[in-house]
Amino acid sequence: MNIDVLVAEIGSTTTLVNAFDIHNNDPIFLGRGVANTTVSTNVVEGLQLAIEDLSKNLNVDEITYDEMFASSSAAGGLRMSVHGLVYEMTVRASKEAALNAGANIHLVTAGKIKERDLKKIIDIKPNIILVAGGTDFGEQDTALDNMEQILNLNLDIPIIYAGNLENHDEIKEMFENHKKQKYLKIVDNVYPRVDLLNILPLRKTIYETFEENIIHAKGMEHIFEMVTEKIMPTPGSVMESTMILRENIGDIITIDVGGATTDIHSVAIPSDDFKEYQEGEPLSKRTVEGDLGVFINHENVIELFDKNELLEKISLDESKFNEIIENYNYIPQTKDERRLVFELTKKCTQLALDRHAGDLKRVFTSSGQKIIPEGKDLTQVEHIVLTGGALINLEGTEEIVRNYISKNPTKLLPNKNVQIYKDHDYIMASVGVLSLKYPEYAVTLLKKSLRIE
Image (cartoon, rainbow, N blue to C red; front, side, top):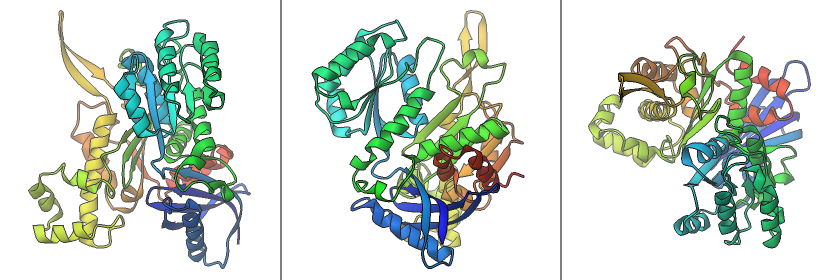
């Protein structure tokens, strides 16, 4: 059987392959194959096994394809370090852009880089280093000094400069002197003036740099033997889908509970009442909670409960609970396992929302007490999408979100009657990367998965 398009999602533990028929006016999701990721050897092995699983699920002997796209969070995903001038300004803008593109940020520094931070960069081994700092025609020296310090480490790592445009010539000369020209990418300033975040050019360059350098990640050397089209970080691909949906149905939040992390993506304008307090908050925002996951990080989440509280919630005694944990699998098989994963999913979702959404704060001023908003305003959001295996496959996960909204009246959250959809076909990440070439098909596929007429 020949498939128009395959999209691989190469994760830390599993590799998915989604099949799409797109060469007609009604693009269709055909099915999925799954296999263990083989990042310790060669991810192509796991990819081939996933395609074999897809052929079994479609009941065909063999699969060929015209195009293959991919997203990846394997081999640690996209690891970045971010270095700016003032934390609340250029550093925050750079961090937002990197998260928006799907990066896992392992180090953030403000001001001149310290010796201990240089050692951390060596230990982290980031895939990309981002240097910014200074509004256009503003402060220049900090970014130049930081770039020189990083270059002196003599690392073979791509470095993106997204700071004061007055530094461009000096940055280029610096890389020439170090014979590192091939590692430099210069983009528009991510924070060109005090009231403006310029995220999109940087995000695009991060995607491109990730794609160019993914073959250097462990086990990924032969990925382009099978992948013929774009490859991007999986969280960045989910953000692309979220942005497409926002353009077509309105302000939106996507909640993605995974085995290792819980990501929240929001694309929303603030309310008129809170606009003046939203400076520095981007239109599109992603937060990633690296400690909240229902498989790899399930032990972290369990520790967030009082043990007796969790046992009561899932109606188990301690011996039965310990038995489940000893044989814990990311796909729950029994009713007891599903109850446990539901509670872990609930904890991940609600904590991640708590960290992502803004809040109303009580402050005291010379003119008396005032209530002001702090953080991202999500009150105008009309749609919430649930994705990730647990939120999609467990029953009643919509109520996790509704309960959180109803019990947190001071948070800057959507109305309790917000529309909540499940990504039934589990294709948010696949469609995001597919949209880079086929945006018109992406909208149709997403609406079908969310069961939007």
